Length: 290
Image (cartoon, rainbow, N blue to C red; front, side, top):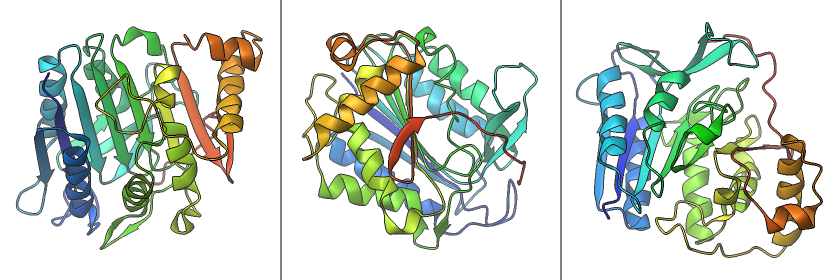
């Protein structure tokens, strides 16, 4: 097994691809350090502090990881930089807009990212961390998620109609993520997103957690071991029940919490936190601000 990470941080110092946002390069290094802590051996950090980063560089980095992936491999892709939206021509977006990452030479759409992830083999896992504006459904895991054979979890900095904040010290979301994981090793994804949302400096944005496997959200966040068991927080049981009830409602199965807990075989999951409460993620009418 070979575990790999590809961490991108774009500051746009020349204005190519977007207005300058100092600090995003630090996010890439933060995520690279997190990858090493996870036990990932092959870590690539890409920033634009010396040269612009192109669409091909980002997509090729993601493609190479997926193309080389074997069952048992754990992959991490992180992006910190501008996010935006474009009109959707494929009619697969609830709000009529594709979410995009902003490379120096043009946007990368959520459809392009999802097309790459479609090649992830069964038994491999892919974790994505997206610190960008309008990034809630950046990977479109809430659309036909069962087409991806491997397990994918994406944690995003903001809902599709929100901006992501940051400073010269890095993104507010990335820093909160790193802090939560350092203080609570082994916690589940559902607990991690709850604690990130409670961070004082994230009061204008809400993190979003998506996956193509409901059970993946119960695993330890950023683990390379798919069989690992999450370390519970004090009130985990009630929160897990809320997650299961939400997922049951999404799929219209009408299952009770007990029945759904016995069979977490759903093919798609989306979790969104608003004002400290877990709710179903429904994309609202976002305005194109970038």
